[in-house]
Image 1 (cartoon, rainbow, N blue to C red):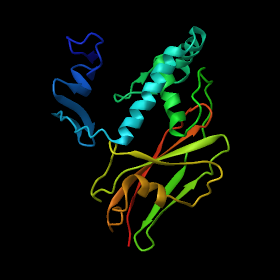
Image 2 (tube, rainbow, N blue to C red):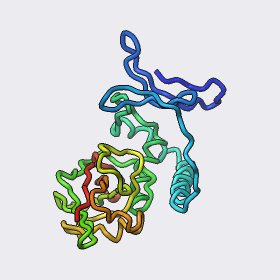
Image 3 (cartoon, rainbow, N blue to C red):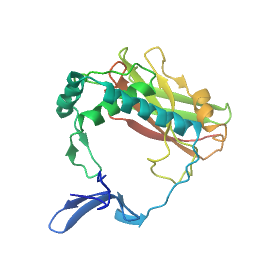
Length: 243
């Protein structure tokens, strides 16, 4: 069950609730509170409003979504129909671990956003499902002594795929997980052989302050089919900066 604000005309989802014999689970935002879950169980906290610094990166992301929204409106009825029909083939899992089916518009945005991230050409017709080769192993050697971040991974990137690499700023070594601070730093293709030096790409986004022994950096690698944006499940890992 989803809760909505009664005075909202479009009724955006504010919180997701799963009912058991009583209340089994709740996620999302409602009346100034945020409901979530960690390894210790469910929790609720007061919602805070982040500062919008209106950075160039934020502006670029907004421009991407604006382009895709206009693109959806410009599709023909046949093209939109292909996306509406394809949604059953691209099911997702929400924060309550329930299977959900996107709308055609959401699927169009989702796949084309992946394509935008790798600087590809936006597609107008929904693709067929396809198997995407996932990452099996990945690690980064972040070394202060030679001032490099070197990524080692398997398997090699297939010719039909691109891997989007995300990372976080340096954090406390005591932090166990991260889901909010990822930024895209690089993309790799078949020609980029492991081990791969990520230093320049990382520093272009986060600067050189990562060179602190003991800091922890989180990474995520998301393989996608280059022409269609169809993704595999992301591979998440982290590293501790060493001397």
